[in-house]
Image (cartoon, rainbow, N blue to C red; front, side):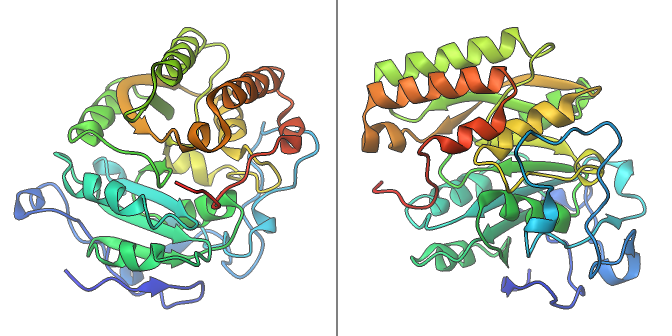
Length: 318
């Protein structure tokens, strides 16, 4: 396995899709030489993909990927990729030195290894990039804020036919990818979210997340919801859309709602462990009230309204 390196937009496309893990995966995966197979469906130096039919722009939001300087990697077609499920993980980061190593260690311990792990760093000033480069299976890309741009850049650079977007501060049980992907395929889902459980947290925070999980289960057919901690999307669905909206603070929830229209969305009964650092930094009662207000805004579909809520990324004490 080659040593990882930081890639910038415009780097040569000649690279191999890496399969982290041991040789037991060899029978199920094959190396894909990108220069031999890639077919650009549009000029990567030109406009981003056209907005898919039926997609509605959130009121007051931006027009989309064009606002992300690094989110224009292009749409690729890889012959044979549809014959089996291949998995890409996309992890946007900004000053996540204290957390991203734990997540990548969890990835390395999975019973079903991903076929590709992409970390898109948005200019961290701590040791985030150095931590990511310690893991030989990581492909490190240079992105930019906001987080939507990193998600778009990673998603459009990925080769897997299933994309899972992860926040850098989550933790994964060892069998998470295996079990989640099995259920995702069995139900023929096109977009899905797991259950979100606080990692080693207080009872009040655990109870609030339990209520959130209960509601997302109950309304998964009528009001699809989830969070950017972990979102799985079929590659063709993602690349046929305008992606995450960089004009919205909560681009993840808006994308889930938008891409689920007319498609198979589901809650997969597998848990990811999420950080409670916002509760610790700003106080549990305040954050519960803030999240409750946000839930009401999202239920009304007024995603741009949530931009007024104080909710920053990449500047945490924990």
